[in-house]
Every structure is written in structure tokens, then in C-alpha cells.
Image (cartoon, rainbow, N blue to C red; front, side, top):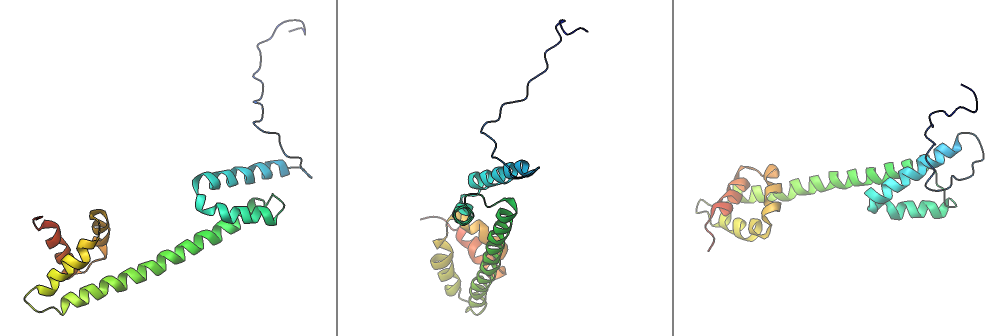
Length: 152
């Protein structure tokens, strides 16, 4: 094929949506892009992390870098895991107290009725469903009794 003959056009590379940042060394533009895309994904998908990210941006002259973002994200997630674990123990103790209270009930059922109406009836139907896996047999019976009781 001679240079004057037309050839099939080759697709041109897509134009960047924003100018690439200048990079001090080879390969750092990709790292900056990667950090920027991670930051954008976190901003879009995890708004609770935005204050942490903005503090990093302020402390790092606008470019905390992907490793620092990931380290802070790990700390953020670890804090939430600790909250879940702490909440789990608190929930177990609270519902354990309800179960123990029902276990010490007199046979007349007055205490169970009180727990049904004053405790379980305070929850939304959705919250009641979430409680089920955490309940002991007496608490579950009280909850089920409330759920099948005729509304009046």
C-alpha cells in the first residue's frame, strides 16, 4: 500500500475528560488517576467518609495519594466493625435481660403481657423482624403473641 492510498481509518484514542496532572516521574500519572478514581468512588458511594477524606486533602496539599486513602479507609472500617461488635454485645445483654425477666415471671402471664405491650409494641414491624434472631424462646413467644393479637 502506498502512502497516497486511503487506508481504513483507525479509531483515535478517547480524549481525556480532564487534563492529566503533571507527574514528577514515570508511572505516577496512573497512580494519581487511580487515587482520584478511588477518592471519587468513596465520595460517591460512602459519603460518611468524606469528612475524613477532606481532612486528608487539607493535610496533604490536595493529594493524599491512594496508599494514604486506603490506610484511612481501613481505620474507618475498623471503627465501624468495633461499633458493630460493641452494639452486638449491648443488644445481647439487653435482650438477655428481657428473657431473664420473662423466665422469672409468675405463671399468670401478667409480666409477659407487660413486656409484649410496653417493650415489643414500641418497635416497628420491621424492627420486630430484625429482633427475631436475637430473642430467646420466652421473648420470641411474647413477640409472636403480640403479632397475632387482634388489633383493637
